[in-house]
Length: 372
Ligand code: GLA
Picture 1: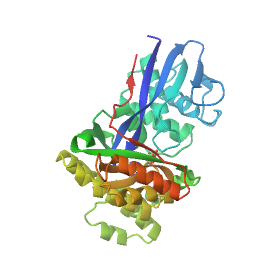
Picture 2 (picture 1 turned 45 degrees about the vertical axis):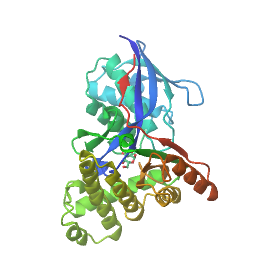
Picture 3 (picture 1 turned 135 degrees about the horizontal axis):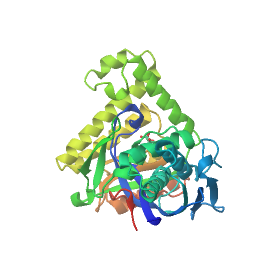
Picture 4 (picture 1 turned 30 degrees about the vertical axis):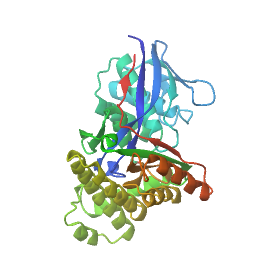
């Protein structure tokens, strides 16, 4: 079959932030918002990409000429990078393709719109060219496209979330080997809601700072003589920290080690059916990202403080930081419920002279799929 339609979702991460490039644990779930790709094989070796959401006409590239740095830059680098990465892996088995994208994943909101674009492309090509690659392999290829072709040094969480999540679950992901467990997560069944709050800000610093944090973590692992910070045990953390001369690195290490532990604790609570107990761990995670890892920003802190002040069970930034989105675990109804949370957050942003945040209830949804 030479054509079809595929969809891949954006994500929020419940807990486990800045752990994925430390071989650690994360717990994302898929959003109902997706990038949809209508794709068809072409036999002339041309990659033709169109997006209903991007200004300008289609981008046309010769598949055989794809190379890092050779693309026009912008949104098309993500799907073009995937085709490049697939060709590198399967040696010429991928030819031309025509793809039209439409997206409901908010862009620039830290909800992984670019990972969704990559994963939907990978899935379409995998089917159209009958490559038979399994999803974890596709996620790795997408990460390679993002790192090498699009030049963003991100980890593997976002692409794995988009490719592997299932409805009604959060994905307990071990980023060392991509082993994973689907953990039932249904806040509504407990009278709760998980709100995503897009601050609508993105601070310019985010790209450089991400790379700096990543390099700092690698330096910490080297100083402690472990393969990755995942290998630093929580028990005995103080002794390990005392071995580090550099205060900055000490803080990065403390965040990663305590965050990995929080993931395990969240999993234990969810397995025990105690969704409410997750709340304080989310807030602890935020404090660690704000004070130790230092990737929060005033707007994200405002969401967390305001939500907790209005009776939320927990709140934290989600994703890379420096803007983007936060998650809030709140009562579904009542004096600390979703309606009240939405109103107080909107008011707080207005009082701070900020544009209204975009707030929605995030239901754990399905991962990437073929639609037709
Ligand atoms: C971004 C990256 C991910 C991950 C998060 C932080 O979303 O794309 O790989 O590192 O930041 O947890």
